[in-house]
Image (cartoon, rainbow, N blue to C red; front, side, top):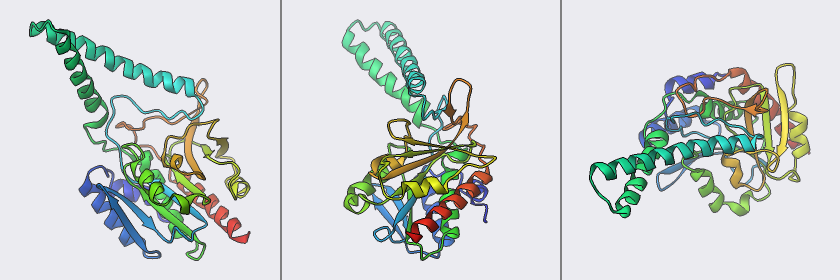
Length: 305
């Protein structure tokens, strides 16, 4: 099996700017000759659609865009909602406090006594800090988020028989608010209503495989659970969307399934570290191979039904 994880990470580690994405799209076109490829573009968001989605029985997806470098890690904690939101609100609270302080200092330095000036200064400083700490600078290390998911989709393309009625989508602009998947779902909602969509995001770092179902009553849930089974190295955790959070592209789809890899902690039950930081350099090709094999098994069982 080809090592797409390290190849993509070495050749196309950053896929944030338009020209970066253009180079990666050409790479996908050169690699994938088995299926028809369509690049669907709307407002500089380009989804790479591989195969016949309309007639596919299952669609595998991942987002190929990469994030900006963040001041603090975006730690994924799918089942620790209180800790996750507390962590997030603490960061926002610090930015708010710093913005208020700097706005007051600026008001004093300029001898501007009007509160309206302070309010405008606060808003300007707040949005500037958010931009600088979360959006301004591209992250050159994105091995787990989401080169790992892209590598798994590429491996599935090569591993699954072409006549298996599957399709694949590499979504764009997930990091900007699930824009690519949102656009696709809006245009194809009826077509996707009863179709399983399995989204692979941050699957390279951790031996705890987390699978989150938007709809536990969808067709082939049992087949997926029978196929993605644990072994000596991997433990598989199945959740519904009320039990766990999975903030990725599957959220837009009725039959969306999110697949992630996590670590198990003493206090934080499941977590994935280093996302959106320079330390996102760890992803294991064995995770890619494991999910490629088990999801290929799922497709085989699905075709037997």
